[in-house]
Image 1: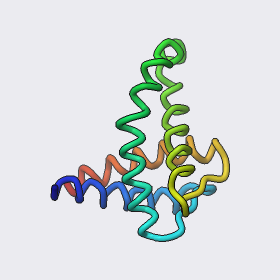
Image 2: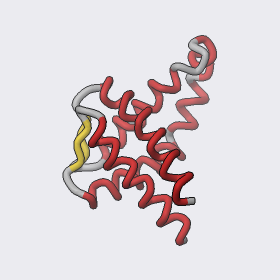
Image 3: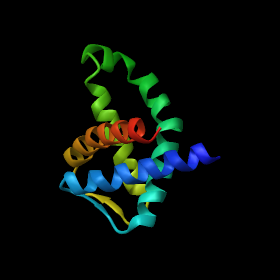
Amino acid sequence: MLSFLVKLLINSMALILTTLFVPGLHLARFSTAIWAALVWGLVNSLIRPVLSFFTFPLQLVTLGLFTLILNGLMLALTAKLVPGFSIRSFSSAVIGSVVLSIISLVLTHLFD
């Protein structure tokens, strides 16, 4: 349980830092970041594998670059599901998902 809470806080902080670096992403407050991190985790664990399975040929043809588009879609879906979290454009979602992944990776290695 403690591990789950630590990962949730790390992802929340990564999301907050991402909104500071990427124009077009906006969080209303810290509690919104916690909800968005929770929804982001659920979306990535439930919906993303299904979409990855069905878009595998496209990922193969693009040598994995379509994965960036999928990550942007998952972040945009998270923004639609969480009130107080907004994304201005799809390009902001794609860039935000890349930055979010990098920041989350760094924070996870620092605190794990």
